[in-house]
Length: 112
Length: 113
Image (cartoon, rainbow over all chains, first blue to last red):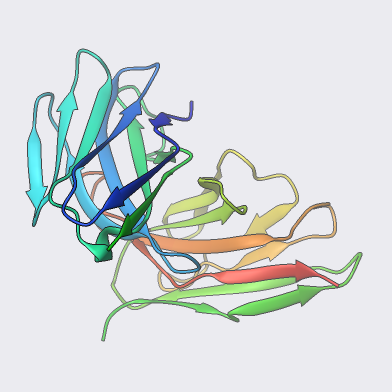
C-alpha cells in the first residue's frame, strides 16, 4: 500500500519553512526520507524507527507519529539547495520481504 | 570509491526486443533492488534480492526478469512482454536490516525506438 504524500508541490522563498507529510493506511515499522534532483539518483536524508522519534540533518528534520501512522519532514530556513522532489518510503510493521514502498513525491522549489 | 554502477545511462529498445540493464555494486551489500520511475511519479519496486541466488517479485514484476548469480551484480532484463518500458530505472542496494538506508545508482533511461 503506497503512502500518501502532501502537498504534491510547494514553492518557497529562500529562508521560508515548509512541512511535507507522509501518511499510511497501515501500521508502520519505519519511515525513510529521500531527496531527488531532476534526472539524478535519490539521496538518503534520514530514517525514523520509533514512534515519536525526531531526527535532524542540518535544518531538515522529521518526526514520526506512530499513532497517526504518519511522518512529517520539516524544511526550516530553506536554502536554494533544498529544491528537488522529496520521497518518503515506508516499511510496514507486518512487512514481509523487507521492502520499502515509496510515496508519489513532493516537489519543492526554493526561489531566491 | 565504493558505490553502485548502472549502465548504460541511456538505452533504446526496438519493438519485440529484450534488453538488459546492468547494476554492479562494490559496497558488499547483501540486498539489491530495482525500481521503475515514470515522469513526475514515485519509485515502484520491480524485483529485489536479499541474498545470492534468491529474488522476489515487487509490485510491478510483469514483463521483467532478474538474476542474482553474484553478490555484486543484479541485472534486470526488460522483456518484449513489457508493453510500456519507457521509464527511468534505478538500482539500489542496502546492507544489514531495513534500518539501514538504500543507496542508489545513477539510473538508466530506457526509451522505445
